[in-house]
Image (cartoon, rainbow, N blue to C red; front, side, top):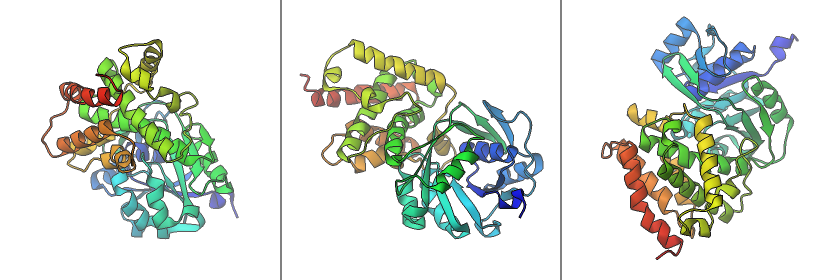
Length: 362
């Protein structure tokens, strides 16, 4: 058997920013990749001109896509060792159902979505066949066939069942072509940490209708981020989740506001937390929320898989800020809220009294 025929076979499902950059970069590295792309315009563009990748750490010239694009699951040439699910969270269960039959014996489904999608995919594929890749870089689909990687970064890779396994090591070696890979036995801890970040950055980026760098210059936006993330951390603690440090530096347990920090106007520790968010805004300054793009295209936003997931799991933990953000994003999707920095400021002012009550401030 030749080296090429024995190499793992990959199916990437979804041709948005993450899926396009992932498939194009892996293909350029010599990986055996097919891309399931339901959008006719994108599929046509890829077949005609290949993957045109922009931004950081991507091939500088177009990557040919001859024989790579698959338009329907039934046309896919399986079996595949890994099915990488790069759809929106709202589509992940349907994507899993339509491709689970394409897995090879011993194959794995891999969730790249934000949120806690592994738990949903496991209902389709089984826990033992479900992996998660927490993505720490951003990407956008600029136009059909053109994908921009907006920041550097890699993956935290783990199995839903917990222990590390050979399938993880094989996938880690493949994904190294895209960015550094860390394997973890605490996938849910990594997921909840990323959930806290996305509940703030993605959802507030949607409401603010701007890239992250511009939004993070506003102090009240950073404070909203801290309030959102603090609620997520509290719910994770209630569920017994041990949060993982993100990208080796971002410690959500430390970033969460204390009762004292909520009660005072300013402190050295608050200043330090604002400084960290400024750095995040600088690193991911070009990031534009995929939920905002979904709303602009008339598609349902994934807020129920982010802030809504936290509210649904809150139990006795108060989550008024996440609930308000969830409601506001849905209002945008219904056309009842325009979005923009003024709407973000109004949300901040509207929720201050709830925050003060929780902090016991008269």
